[in-house]
Image: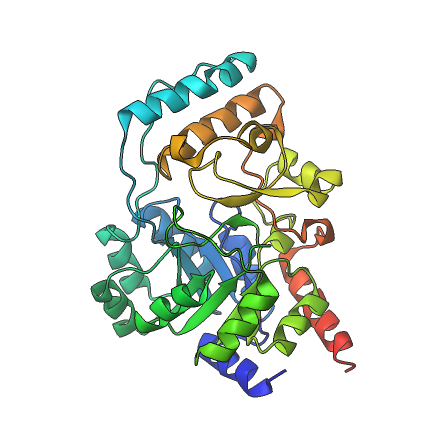
Length: 359
């Protein structure tokens, strides 16, 4: 491993250990991020599923608990294009599931999340709050938005699933790259969900980006313990980002059904699905992923319009004591998850890294 590469990342992010807790909108919390930060890693919150006021409250809640570095993640997807015919057909297709659960089927769908690409209020809130890091998922904002964040002294990270995406991120002003392998849980960070995807694994993607890019690379996907982090560092990465490892911490917002699934044989079976949200995402295999397995992606409404119905179906399922319709995002390393407090998990990861190095 390159200690200079690791040192560069630690200095850039003002952290003690080359570990980033993934943002995970809807799962990570200010409490989780603060515990991770206080343990010397980079704590993260995802604000892609909230508005500027919600982001301000989450940042304030973090700062009540920690004065260390915080990563605030935003979604940079192309704004959804409404298609009434496709959305009506999608509702009709899922109606039998709602009826089976004894729930009322929604009549219309809406774009429940606003993309950072067009969210001026979110940009203004971040420029004022000045978190240490802002990270991008699904793409890259305009040069004007990138400049505003950089002028505020904010370090920028961007998720890439390919060399082309990484090059576009660096050309656009990002300081470091999160190399998201196909193993990773949650939403795949592809810029264009309709384009061809080479589905590069974490190991291959990390090595390619380390060779081709002149910025720090963070490996993400399938990494769950100190040995995995050390392996990423030996591949030339400057650090590692872990998400699934933190899903079962007590600070997580994962519900009981999600946690039970993570502790069961279900953790050994994950699939990439588009049916839940409208974008490809790796999920524990459940009733929803099975239902959507053979559906043509062209029939699914745009993200996040499809997610509006997906969330409604999950709520209906929970009301009927059927957790199998949840967005139970998880990577291929899910069977290795541990239900430790977030800060204790970071300390354990650091100890495992030291042991792996023979220290």
